[in-house]
Image 1 (cartoon, one colour):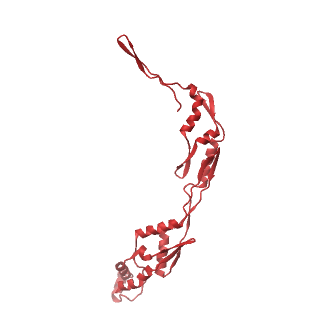
Image 2 (cartoon, helix red, strand yellow; image 1 turned 90 degrees about the vertical axis):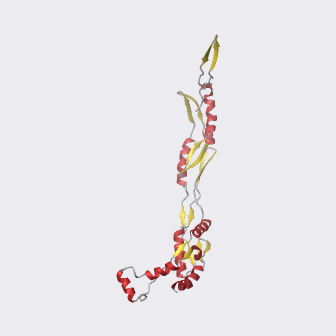
Image 3 (cartoon, helix red, strand yellow; image 1 turned 30 degrees about the vertical axis):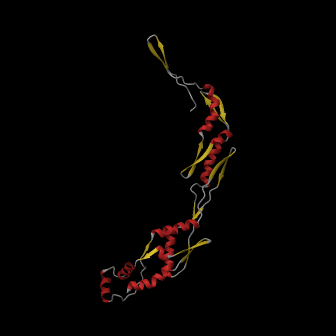
Length: 248
């Protein structure tokens, strides 16, 4: 009888959709799809309420249903529907945009990061549950701000380092002698930025740098000479090879 009464009163309430507003958007949640009503557990919870101590249990023997007490029904969360609610929330909120960096000519430009929005699922589901049991049909989601993984401040710190690299020619020396310089425009063409955790790292393309440096030292490089052999009479003699030098 208790379970039949619970089903009669709670099933229609759980079947009534709750309208969840997320800013200017909204979607409906069917509580009976998010939670499964456990009738035996709810009945047992109600029966055990007020019987936690020996004295209360003895009193219950005298008047088992004399005092009236309120308990919440046992609702088992369905994991699949929780994920569905989370997916809907992601569709109705905005993802943060990371700050960006790019090189224009010899200028380093920072694209500011943009915070996103998010709704925590657990507090929202608790609100929907409370609204359902209270007979309410509307819930307003609490929208929080989400910082981008790379903030504007972090990008600006990397940009300052990049601007220092491009601030003037970098003199190239070989064995104590100046052999040339890498100009800002050449360095800018080799520069890029790669994600590294919550910031960026400055990278210089090795091939681009090699093309700029090679003319400065090419006349000073030595070609390697392969080892060989020569025959002298009946003897074969090895002629040692000679290592060369190259730009590292």
